[in-house]
Amino acid sequence: MDLAIAGRGALVFGGSRGMGRACAQQLALEGVRVVIAARTEATLRQAAAELTAQAGTPVGWVVADITTAAGRDAALAACPAPDILVNNADGRPPGDFREWTPEDWHAALDAMMVGPIEMIRRTVDPMLERGFGRIVNIVSRSVKTPAAELGLSNGARSGLVGFVAGVARQTVRRNVTINNILPGAFATDAQRHHIEGMIAKGETKSFEQLWDERGRDNPAGRFGEAAEVGGLCAYLCSAQAGYITGQSLMIDGGAYPGTF
Ligand SMILES: NC(=O)c1ccc[n+]([C@@H]2O[C@H](COP(=O)([O-])OP(=O)(O)OC[C@H]3O[C@@H](n4cnc5c(N)ncnc54)[C@H](OP(=O)(O)O)[C@@H]3O)[C@@H](O)[C@H]2O)c1
Image 1 (cartoon, rainbow, N blue to C red):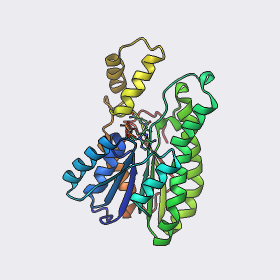
Image 2: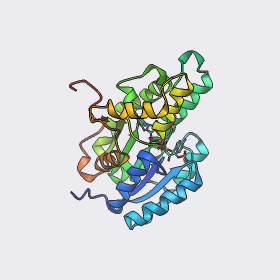
Image 3: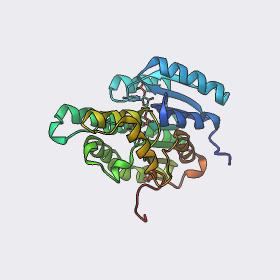
Image 4: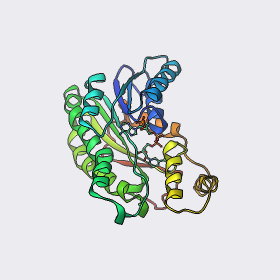
């Protein structure tokens, strides 16, 4: 299927690694002019070069931290008025809520709620004027199946999803959609850091045991592959997906046990 987005411009946060990179790759393969944003120049440079070679279309990059005003300015200077915005950044490590300070909460909110909302605020009006826009937030299954130790994520990400649920109904009339992807367990650096965090907090099993269990215990018997999120993201950004908005789509190998 031709997604009919060739020539559109996309800004993909967290585009240097993991699921963000997979989104950038799939969009670039569709002929989208992609700029990837993240905090580390070396990985950005390398990812942009590899994605350019794979897609045969130039992929740009910018050092930009979504949690800071300066980072968001830098991203928009590199990719002014994108047609497609992918919001994505690190989660927070697991822990006990009794130990979290207001500063921990502010950091979580900046990464998982305020940063993405600021990016939506600053890109949505030009999208509405052009009559096309696609915004995808990489969130987490944790907003639907919360684990207590991921409370910073559960709280901050739920704020973003709640905000999107309202605003997405205001923009769709002008062909601007806003949706959330809720990944389950994916074999990425974030998964490695999550398991390392569990061990640091007293989990007695080894890294290898935990890694194997988490993949094997999924109904699919494996971790998700980042490319699977990339494909879903590209479809949500397609011309054909203009009637899908305000949704939170689980991609978790069936781990969420409900009927709906
Ligand atoms: N992997 C899983 O199983 C899983 C499950 C549910 C939810 N999630 C969530 O999904 C998101 C993506 O996960 P992933 O597994 O793809 O992560 P990943 O492989 O660790 O990649 C994260 C990407 O985001 C960039 N990044 C991190 N913080 C940033 C910031 N403040 N500003 C801009 N870029 C930033 C990173 O580059 P730099 O570090 O260089 O900035 C990197 O490009 C995360 O929020 C994660 O918590 C992951």
